[in-house]
Each structure stands twice: as structure tokens, then as C-alpha cells.
Length: 346
Ligand code: PEP
Ligand code: MN
Image 1 (tube, rainbow, N blue to C red):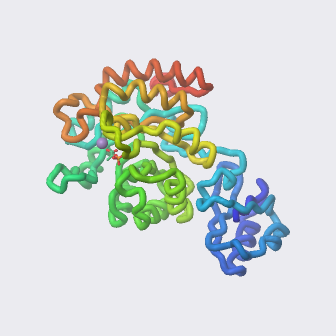
Image 2 (tube, protein in one colour):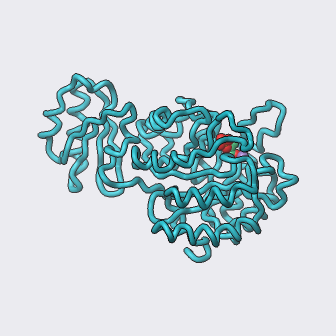
Image 3 (tube, helix red, strand yellow):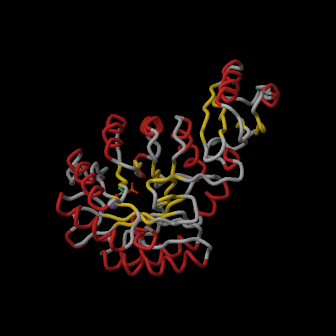
């Protein structure tokens, strides 16, 4: 069940509803939306009587959500889409389609400062870069860890771009949250439920990538782990799934974008870099993603892709990003969105 409070409901009324939920043996999780509060009922409520809740002061309506995911479900937010804000010029879920760009890994102090500046000049709205890298090969570069986070923080200082970086273990959530504006959960950790709960408790915006072998149904249930821990700032990210096809690194499922919008109020970002594995496919798939209704893009961009420490083959250059931004804003306009380069926004 989801209890939608009236817009003018007081904090005491929200507390009253939460107490009633506890009385009937379930857990209450109030979520502060942009203009109203909903209280999610956590636990098996199939045999519970919700009529008491309907009568409680401040309640607008009580909704039974039939899907296995509750808080990610569209009904949980009424008709509204959730907006997740990383900074004044970077809001996901509104009219703007922000672009997160940057290298796969934070490679060094000089390198990240240089690429951050180039991504900003190209028009990107946020900077990405991994300091903790989840590598398939245990002997491969694992990232610079906290040093990498400090380098990212310096790059934010220099450019003003909010930073998005991955966290791979619950023990590091506090540390990464100290530096980052947005915590990325990678595909390999999309069903690491303890990690999802930990980023949920941190309250920081989360860029939550779809697991490479996850159905949409499983994906939205996993998103509920973050939401149910009290964090409403979840951005979904389609980054390609495993199929038999091998001309691309993954198969970028663009139909997931409208499907997720049908089922959920959460913003949806597309990552055409991991979705294809090839720099030459990134521009076309970025334009297609905006046409399909995505709320943002996450693109790997490197000043010297041939020598990138990780994911060079799928990284575009700053020159390619600059050119891409021009056509992205034209496609966005055609679907009633905006994707203006940062310079034009700020
Ligand atoms: C990344 O963003 O560099 C990354 C490791 O992504 P994914 O988890 O989608 O593979
Ligand atoms: Mn990468």
C-alpha cells in the first residue's frame, strides 16, 4: 500500500499515519516528494485492512500497488515524475536532458582536471570518473580509491561540475558520499542488496545502473531497496544487457526507456558507451536515446582514448562530444525537451 498525503498535510499527520501503520504490524517509510509526502507501507499488506488509514487526518488516498515493486511504481508518486537534482544546472526528470561526461577511470590529478575542463567546454552538465573500479579481471587497474575521489573533488572545484562516481562496497559509502554529488551503482552490483540499502541510507542521489542480466521487473524491485531505505533520489540507468549478439559489448535496450517510464516515476538515463562498447556508435545511440524519451545521458569521454587506462574503445573525444551536443539539442527540441550545452544553460 501507498498512502498519499494531502499537499497541506502537517508533519504530525504524517507521523500519525506512520504510527497507525506500525500498529497494524507493518513498517512505514515516509518519502518527501517535490510537493507532497507519500508514506510507503513496507511488509506483506495483502491481508491488512487499509480502511483505518483512509480515514486518518491528512490522508488524500490509499493505493494498493499490485506490482512487486512499490515505491518505484508510478502510483507511488501520483502523476508526477521524480526530479533528481545534482546541481542548479543538472536536474534529471524535468524538461532538461543533462549529459554526464568524463573518463571511465580517474587516471591522475592532471588528467582529470584536463578532461573535466574539456567536458565542460563541450557542454556537459556533470563529470563522471571512477575512483573505485569493479574490474572483471582481478589483476587489472582497480582505481585510485580515496586519492581519486580527492582528484574528482578538485575537478569539481575547478569547473563547478557536479561529480558522479561509483561505490562498490557498503563499507565505502560514507567515504564516497563525502566527495561525490552522486553515487553510481554499477551493473555488477545491481543486486548487491546490502550496498543498495547502504546508498539508500546515505540519502545522496544515486545513478543506479541496470544489472546486465536483469529483467525490468527485477530492476525496479532492486530500486525499491534504495527507496525503502529512505532515499528518494534514484536515477535509473540503462547501460545494455547481455545477449547472444557480439557486434556490441552489450545490447543497448532502448525500449527499456519508455517501458520504465510507463511503470515508474523515476528518471531514466542512458549510457551508450557501456551499452555499445564502441565510440563510433555512441553519437547515434545518444540521439536515439533522447528520441526515446531518456532523462539524461552518461557518456565516457577521454582526451586520448587510445591510451585510456580503461574503456578506451568506447570513449569519445572532447571534439566528438562538442559536435554531438549540437545534434542532441536539436533532437531534444523535436521531442519537447532541452539539451543545451552548459554554457548556454548557465
Ligand atoms: C562505468 O561506468 O565505468 C562502469 C563500470 O559501468 P557499468 O557498471 O555499467 O559496467
Ligand atoms: Mn567504463
